[in-house]
Amino acid sequence: MNGGNTYSGKFFKMTADIAYTYTTAWDDATSTENKYTAIGCKLGSDSYTDHHPFSGTFDGDGHTVSGIRIYKSGNAWTDSFQGLFGYVKNGTVRNVTVADARITGDQNVGGIVGDARNMEGTCTIENCHVLGNVAIHAVADYSTKHGGIAGALGGTLGGTTVSRCTSAVTLTVKDGLTGCESFGGIVGACTGGTLRNNIAIGCTVPAVNLAGAIIGYNYVATTEYNYYSNCTVGSNTSNIGYAWGDITTDPEDATKHPDGAVPLAATMLSETAAMPALSSGEKVAFYREFTWGKASTICLPFDYTPAAGIGTFYEFAGVNAEKTEVTMEAANTAATPLTANTPYLFMPTTGAVVFQGEAGASTAAGSATVGDWQFKGTYETIEWSSDPLTIYGFASGEAYGGATDDTEVGTFIRVHTGGIRPLRAYDCTGMGFPCAADPRVMATNLYDAIWQAGVILLPVRSVGVMGDERTYENPVALRAVVSTDAMTADWFPFPYDFLRDVSNEIIRKVRGVNRVVYDISSKPPATIEWE
Image 1 (cartoon, rainbow, N blue to C red):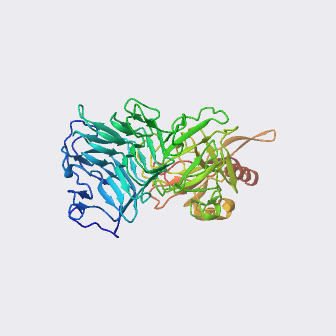
Image 2 (image 1 turned 90 degrees about the horizontal axis):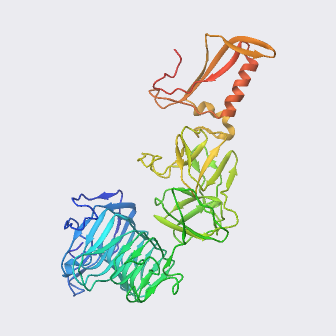
């Protein structure tokens, strides 16, 4: 790559995460570890012999690159143009996340790309994410153009685009340096191009000349719908979108660029705490990370018009019980704007979204019912310490409490134990059982849904009451299990109404029986049969 092949017209796609080994922590200020070579470079000023950009298409497909360690301490060409990609011209980088990285360089240094630009074509950086355990560092005087996503953005106006990216980067400079400038949470310096729908959240930017939470120095770039929250630029936490000059004398943000680089609403909703009481018209925002291409849910206390390219929202249209799938098809695509307090299904095409709007008069989470299924929104955490039998939702990839779960993210599953966080939704059904059978025709499909079932007449007498008389009759035990190989088995979760009806019918019709019990023992320790 860095020897001259630009890979123009070629396509590369990640099929798994990439984790590089390292010996020093991402935030170790003394680290000089250098174990990664950026893709694409500039080795000198001659654009014909010294410039070796990446000009192909790189699709991370939602995967993560972690463990990058770069250390460049001088002012030579080889000390600049550093990042996952060093230099991208007329190329595309998309759908990739950088985590646990430390990148030290001179000029044009970024988490995703050091320098991105177009010449008689287009250059696109989209849906890329730099997490909070990424540091970009300067150790040389006059280091410039350091950014969380890109160090520098340039080319013809509008030809280079950074969109739908998020950054939580930490930018730092060695103590005592002079002449450092153009540091930004998203991009260090823009001499062209477009920034649209990007989020800087929790970024730390040092007090250098020309610094901002979104852009350090913006010359002519178009900026639309870029947001920052909980960011610090020097000692400042407000009016820090981007700067033309020194951050203490000429900051730029909502007062001059209402759609370009603005702070998020003061009221930030949390993923871990119940939604607070909101006043009608109160401006609120909710930041949430998603797994690209994996189904999820959302329920918001305000009307919301989705930004372009973040994904598709669906109204609840029921559950395909035979396939264990929630219906997410073109026919049930949600109309916009999304309605406040209404739960929606969401198929994201980005790694993070800022939802922002004004609370309505009512902030009670709603629900939608189709057939035997109800889709319910929640604004608080709900926990199930035991199997609720009738609750379904999309797997998050984490067991409740933070441990890793082997269930693939986005899989529609029945909840056994666990919880759901605020501003989401879940499914429940009065016919809660494994969806090998359609709930609406349960009675005729139990044969296919259950591995084995039986009734056991117990050789004991049970005291009962019939009318005004005591009875001394036999109890019976119902046993039904699901299994794949009979080596292990789990009891079948009949809904309570079904068990009640079966019990009543047996006692009413079978002489000599006055009690019905249901065996909820799994194998092991119990066996399937009673012996």
